[in-house]
Length: 430
Image (tube, rainbow, N blue to C red):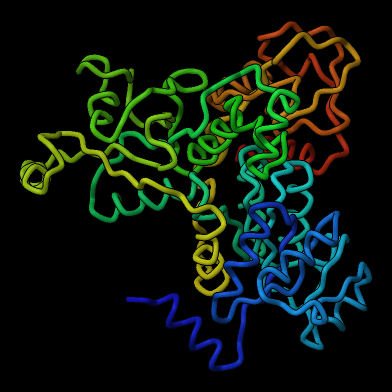
């Protein structure tokens, strides 16, 4: 019991610590910095952000004296700052993986092309890579996981996001010998495929989020990308293109997530799904073919079976990340990785008419949104994964609203790290 707490206290007593670099100081990065300030043997030594004052404010809010914080973009100065026990703030992301003192890099950006650069270089420098960037993981996670294994480091998503929380439940079920039929998450916002950063600007300001991030939540792209990571981890697929999005509740989920032949809404099991009625939690539907197990589940109040709901009514985002950090750095274990390879893809749908020559804007934009499908279909139809879109991606022909965009319709940035990683991943059949 209390293994993490006990081990971190032992490390602190021995003068040891996990030294961390955090890239991105928005809501998630800032709250993570505050949470880590309460942890034994976990030290934020470098914070990278385009706006240094945001990083400084987050560190001060976490209880670090401003005279202990030094800004530099220079490697040698950064090295000295850390050696002398200070905390470094920088706009130079390269310091995160280059500074020798850093044990692990945490990507809190949510920017897939940038996340690919960070992850690739961090792994090449033999540092653990911990990512909030599900957008990047959903499209090139398998090749990054492969690189990390070969480099002897951990590449992992976090426990606090829905994908990691779902896998936590699945591990619990597998540990009891139960079969998992459905892996699902709640969706907080009503689904509006036409949402744009402009239409959500005021609401985003109220929530303290970027308008693009909130747009990706509302138009469903973020949900698709999160379930994409779950698919790649478990080998599950959506039952239909983009999932059903079944409205349910803890009281009705078992019935709603049965097969159609049994009065439910699914055509098969082994699927990922989402539901507004279960937000902000995650849940799985499990079963057992053992009569005594079913009898005990009924005795314990789980219903008549043969299917049962296991429900986690929350996910705590950055607040749970210290658990992932500990597992990665101390135990060499990942929270969630794409063990099954690229099982699914979040492909691109035109949100409005797009003219030839126009730039596509990617996740959380006014031009496109994403829907989840199988990787086999994505390859067969040469579809465009939405996270491959960079600021240099443009349409090469007119595209009508509602079109599932394929590669013949766009020009990718072939020099982008994320594009090159995806090409490599496909060639390796990961």
